[in-house]
Amino acid sequence: MNFTLRQKIFVIFAMLLLITVLIAWQSIRSFNQLGKSINVILEENYRSVIACQQMKDALERIDSGLLFILSDFVKEGVNQIEANRDNFKAALKTELNNLTLPGESAQAFALKSLFELYSETLTTFMKSKPELLRQLYFENLFPLFKRIKHKAEAILQLNQTNMNVANGRTRRMAAKARRDMIFFLGLSVSLILLFMLFSNHWIL
Image (cartoon, rainbow, N blue to C red; front, side):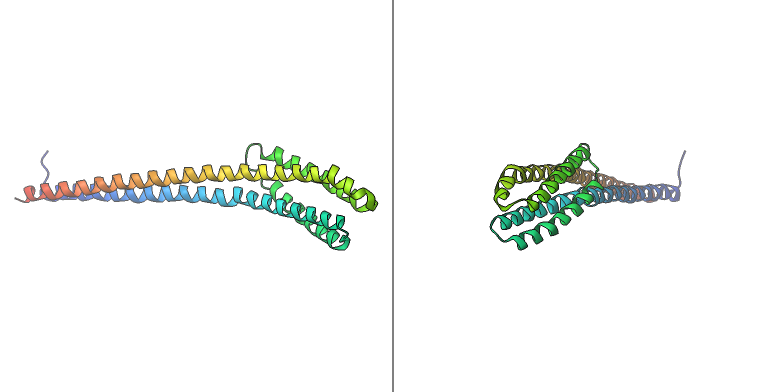
């Protein structure tokens, strides 16, 4: 079947239009996937990382408050303990409402149980006689402090690792999108060159 010059030109431009549409569609699709991956990183894991860091900071300040009390700065120590106990509870609540990774739930509830025990021991510490405070601190509170801090760090690292994995996946998706765009653009340029080559022959 013989095509007229007008039909040949129409076919070539139709193919170029199709390639352009494919490039635009692939780009939009890739960027949408990248956007979703970034949202997952920011909205889920990042929130848990911040909550765990806040728990660690609050726990450190509670421990400093206990040392204030042992150094006979009782009022300052009590104020610091109470304020940061509330801060820890608020950060823990944020974490418990944001359990997104395998194994995170078990670790978060273990952390909750440890802090409840720590909080009960704190109450006992506050009511104890001065001569018993050092023993309570070094035998009960300080070991619990280390266990809670270690557990919060484990949850933080779990989420941090997942963020790194998601970041690597996002980079690979971006690289693939870039390769696809280069391929389609190369195909489009090749068709244009072919069109320029053959159009001269057709016109002649």
